[in-house]
Amino acid sequence: MRKNDAGEGARPRPHAQRSARPVAAFATACAAVLAAAAVSVPAVAASGAAAQPVASAAAAPSAPDSASAMAASSGEVRNWYNDPFFALSSAPGACPQPLGPRMTKAEADDDAHYRVERGTTCWLAHKCTKPNSYLYDADIATAIRARFKGDASLAGTSVWITVQRRFVYAEGCAPAAFDRAALERRLAAIPDVDQVFVRLRADARARPPYKTWPPAR
Image (tube, rainbow, N blue to C red):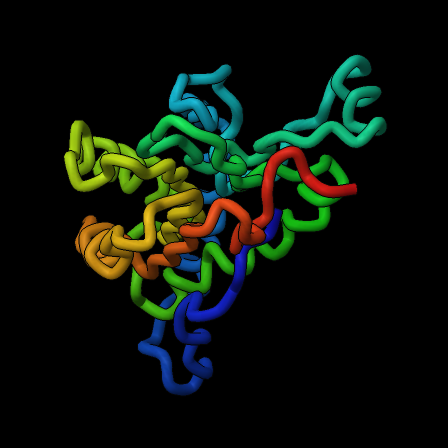
């Protein structure tokens, strides 16, 4: 699933207006992104449990073997890029689980170019010290878990977190009285977070304000 691109950051300034950077610097940054693809990091499942390691979020999906290729061809939907996705809270009762970063292999392949383009925009605009904004996501997810561990303010809520290129999405269900603005402020205060989107359903009879799992076909 490709998340909204609204507010993803300023476009790179025209070449004539940017501070002079050797072409070699950009080549080095690109090489760093490609090198990051070789680094494995633990995947985080919707339940909060660690899954099998896969390639870095900045990289394209690895070439599937024959068995996984067959699964992919049948429309397998999963978190191909290992974007952080986990349950922050889980209240009793039914709450539709968000689709989060899960998508088909075809959608992941289609998204590969855009991830590289969007990811490097932050560095080109001199807003990131890392060469790709997706490289911040694992640390942001860890900080969110630590900040909200055992937090009483989440009582009665079922909230899932997705982190993609420094954007944080909080989706799920919460009572109407729940302070959504306070949650947004607290998430926005996490180091390196760029934007926060809070999409929580209050009425159990209402349609969720986010895409749900399993995906509609």
